[in-house]
Amino acid sequence: MLTVTAAIIRREGKFLSARRKPGSHMAGYWEFPGGKLEPNETPRQCLKRELREEFNIDSDIGSFFGESCYDYGTKQIRLLCYFADYLSGNFELHDHDEIRWLPAHQLLSLSWAPADIPLVEKLVEQTR
Image (cartoon, rainbow, N blue to C red):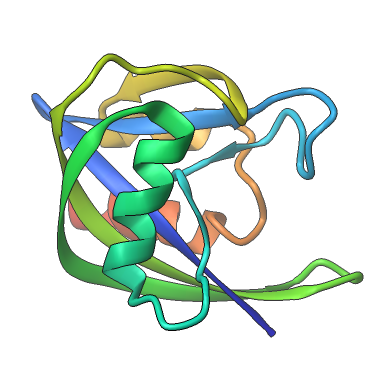
């Protein structure tokens, strides 16, 4: 099972959603950004690195939010999700072709990657 991380980035009452670019794994699906955990790396270190690599932003990784496991057929993933705060940097898209800042009640209008869906539903429920 592959361990990956995801960040729920909040800013001004809205949450960051990122759409995977064409040609990538899960192209067209929305996700909370993050990436694969490397050897000897903590989930928080992974998220900080991935957000810098994928978006050129600095962030503060906060509390653990939840976990989701999903079998994509060719691989199984364990997704560890944390709250994060955007600190600085101009967003640059490398693995995504669009980002949106949405209030929680609008998140479910997007087509989410299957592993993210339970986490999105939990976030929406907790912010009601």
